[in-house]
Image (cartoon, rainbow, N blue to C red; front, side, top):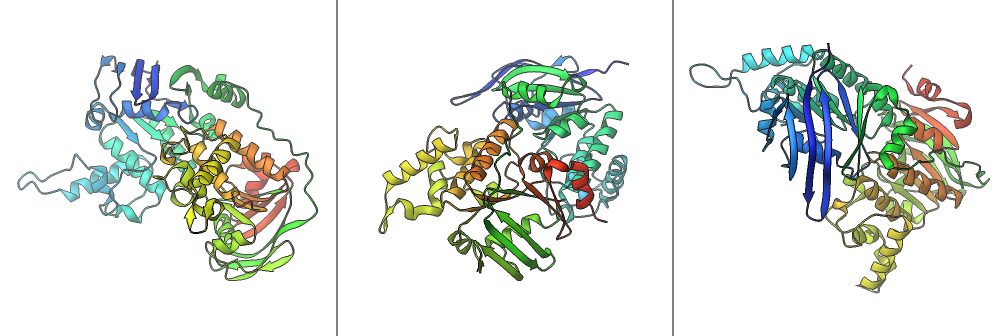
Amino acid sequence: MASECVIEVRNLSMSFPGVKALEAVRLDVQSGQVHAIVGENGAGKSTLMKVLAGLHTPDCGEVRFKGQNIQLRNPHEALRRGICMIHQELQLFPDLTVAENIFMGQERASRFLGWLDQRTMNREAKRLLERLGIQLAPATKMRQLSVAEMQTVEIAKALAYNAEVIIMDEPTSAISDREVERLFEVIRDLKRHGVAVVYISHRLEEIFRIADVVTVLRDGQYISTHPIKDLDTRKLISLMVGRELNSLLDKSRPPQQAIALAVRRLHRSARFRDVSFDVRRGEIVGLAGLMGAGRTELLQAIFGLAPADGGEIHVDGQCVRIRSPRQAMACGIGMVTEDRKGYGLVLNMSVKHNLTLSHLRRCSRGLWLDHRAESRLAQERIKMFSIKAAGENESVNHLSGGNQQKVVLAKALLAEPDILLLDEPTRGIDIGAKAEVHAIINRLAEAGKAILMASSELPEILSLSDRILVMREGAITAELDPRRTSQEEIMKHAMPA
């Protein structure tokens, strides 16, 4: 039996001040299918999804639901039609229970006094969660749940609204590999029940695993739609960016013999233990492992964000004491943190001020800030790192994820560190920006920087690294040659015994 077309979009256009976000976009979503929407940052994916969820009103075009032309003026109308969006930033009430969150906006009330019927809500919530294969007490407060469990509650909430279309925006950005597998099982179950899932992700390996159909957007325009079986990674990337990307970097540069960073028996209570390794100048050492393996904590200890309890750190052969980022930078160590929005950027400040904030001495005369020198420095970095911005004074919050990441890199390198710690350097950025960041990292190694890079993306680890260290439960379990290993072997050393 052929699947029913639940959503049809035709000639949809939408503009914001100075920006054409969507232009003549089309989309067909079938019931019982996973339809992936892909494209670089700024391609229009989120804008299109927000139109379908009733958060934006388009300038022109048609949206049809089950053949009927509809106007979605707000999210309540979309929910009433059976269209639900699960945002990357989950929309939940942490101090209410699982059941209360599931039935928010359609609470069950007692027949006589109108009070909330907690017993009925708990019973129905349990039924919905069991349908998703989740054993979760409906009376549990939301703040007690993991991110993956919160996502499941959002899906249960969509089912409570009898959703026929569930939009998932970057649903795996903050969950572990095991939780990703569980989410995929839930998605497959939704398909079996005839629910259409619209899936947005920058992780192409996920798209090839879970999607049935892929629609590509570029610069706000519809490019094409294909069954996933008709695509491979190279063809999909070419459709997304409009050009071929050479993702295989030249690693013919031999690392220098000089050891820039040496770690000896470093440990921090309950985080990592007895960690020892070297990083040479001109070398990229990849740090692989599952979430919670201790990679981030190790980098934070080296940079002084969360100092180690014991062990030694040697820079250029000298034992150094690092208890703060200021001391790390004085030793020639720079760091790009995992959470660029939480730690790497001040979002409401300009590109210029974000770049120079940690290095004001370079653009000051005595006690006074030299605004011309600051502008020259910012413009030089914007050009050097190909940061796409309206100008140095544009708020960094308005930039795409990839350009925000380049600002973070440029800021870290403004102090001209010899050792660079990178924690998930391409998390949440599109494939084109990722290739640019990879090229920057490779150039830094060619220039003789010693780089220690933690990444959850095994293809990234394999393509960039000269050596790979695998961490498991706070300890280094293997050192591998990327030319002679595989993703499967890395995972064998990363998985708990």
